[in-house]
Length: 113
Image (tube, rainbow, N blue to C red; front, side, top):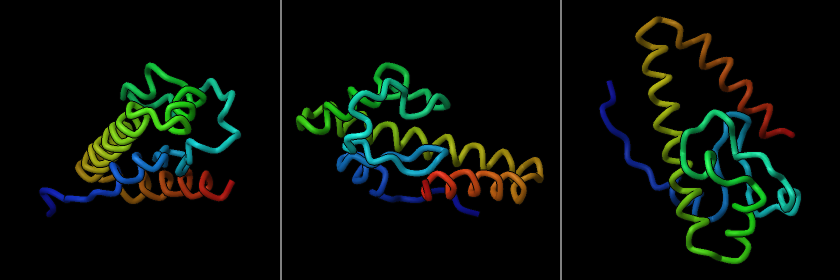
């Protein structure tokens, strides 16, 4: 089994404005998010998702406010911790294959749009 993995991708991507969501990656600086009042995802308990909308997070990144990269990095870390917890739970209950197929289908469909 695996006890630990170390990766800078969640923080690096967050610092550069990319966040993970169940529907694929979101590039927060895109102009389409200028007036988007939705959270990054409704499924995430991180401060970026519970307190700020995409438009404000975009503003933070475009104006190079230090809070923006921090919030996005925290979101990505929170997202991956939750993803690994769910994967672990599905492995324990014997449903990993079905769950991972469904999860990857949703994620990949979001990337293609």
